[in-house]
Length: 236
Ligand code: ATP
Image (cartoon, rainbow, N blue to C red; front, side, top):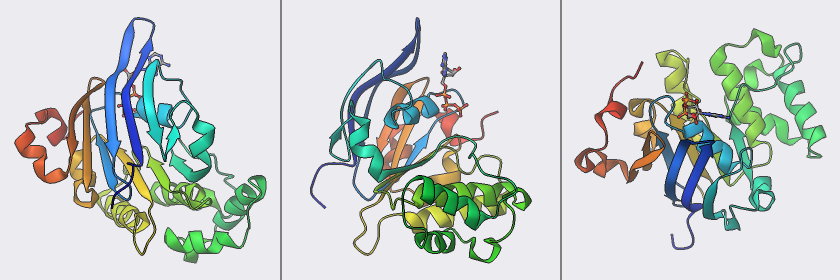
């Protein structure tokens, strides 16, 4: 569909002192895409996502997110949800209570909580204490929290990290289901240090290496584009 990209950012950089962590990134993510943000540990993925979320101030960078200036995150953050660090859950509260607490804090309608629990596949375990959840379930609960505002942009930082193969598969299915469909225009940006973990669900791929853009575009062209081999196999 025509119209501006969900994320259209140019020259995004972050320097800490003399150290350049993100260097002159141009990001262009179409509306409705599931975009994989791939790169080895330390490539600058988290820093980039934190800049997009207004948590870290870019050293340089301009452009728009959801049509609002990058420099004015307050314009687009109300329509953005994120899983970016260990979710702050109340371990002794149930999943449902955790989400109800967040909706009340955010001034939203608690009736929405059950729909979101269902969407992330936690409806059956909704009344169990969060501390009884597996890592994968905690991640899903955190994603549920990110969905409470029905965001147009969902940013997920390494949601498959630490999960076993079954958990990774469940997470992939979940992310695919959260994407745009039936007239919903949601864009998902999901980072991973392993291309293979997210490749199948992505219709857009961004590869970063040492803070620099190595590839951006549809997954089909990635191999022929000769992106760094380091991103195509496990990195430890
Ligand atoms: P990971 O998967 O390990 O999180 P990443 O691709 O997300 O990797 P970042 O977390 O963005 O990478 O970190 C990129 C580099 O920037 C790392 O070398 C990190 O040490 C450095 N870095 C991050 N934050 C700071 C900071 N506040 N001050 C100095 N250096 C930082």
